[in-house]
Length: 333
Ligand code: SAM
Ligand code: DTB
Ligand code: SF4
Image 1 (cartoon, rainbow, N blue to C red):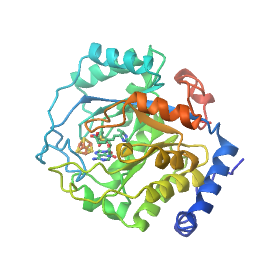
Image 2 (image 1 turned 90 degrees about the vertical axis):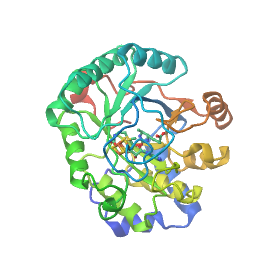
Image 3 (image 1 turned 120 degrees about the horizontal axis):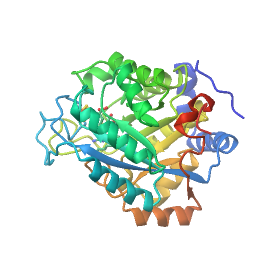
């Protein structure tokens, strides 16, 4: 079993990231096999519960109100709509539902009361419930936890130094504070980033250092490839190469051996063999369903065919216990 370390240096991470590709994949696959059932892949379904009209200026995001994208703005869904979508996702094999809202932060109002009811409803379906709602105070995190929330997603997106180039309406420290608030409420943490924003390899390494130096590693780390959207400042960014995706995933797997590493946005541009390499390099989660939050994702049937061909199986929900037993849960094994 690999040792869990929270003191990785930039030099060590860079050495791993820049090692010859096949050595890197071999090492990551070895760590994966020592620490995980490598044939199990978690299927998470995404649901945009409130779409567009966001006041933030994240340069990659089609939901920022200030950019002119072809997005249809949608007010907060009803609890019934969410329950219905969750049931469908569960029937299709998803064990986790991640609900996303285009909010800067959570406010203590009727909308948040409704999200609390959504969390209760999805939790009662025996699915792991995840939310990504923007910034959060400790008491809001506690309310979500009390309602049965399993995980909170809050991505770092890039390195601390690069952050100001991508987002000016909040700081890296704001981001870290919210993650800390989720931790204080004993929620599991899902936090990762995006590659293809125009960042350097050093930025990627620095972000991986921040994640792996947290006192507890995030239980999930999503690795997103930028989906360039017309109307956003990053619309013309070239697509990232699959090799960069593989390097990010493999490095995350090696330095955070127990974490669920998610091959997230960008799969529509990847072939089956590209994705197979990512699974080999340690990815053990995907978002399934033909839509991410607002952009396309491979069709569910295609993913099931891919699982069949690669001999992968969906991971069941709550493998490490239910939220009532938080004290007994360490990292997701
Ligand atoms: N508003 C909340 C927030 O920003 O935390 C939650 C929703 S936000 C859309 C969730 C995450 O989606 C972002 O942190 C970012 O990592 C990812 N994301 C957004 N647009 C993307 C894009 N075009 N390509 C890849 N990932 C994207
Ligand atoms: C994550 O890291 N990626 C997901 C989820 N967490 C919330 C979101 C990807 C969004 C891609 C762009 C879109 O569909 O709007
Ligand atoms: Fe808003 Fe989140 Fe999009 Fe940023 S990433 S503009 S906070 S929805």
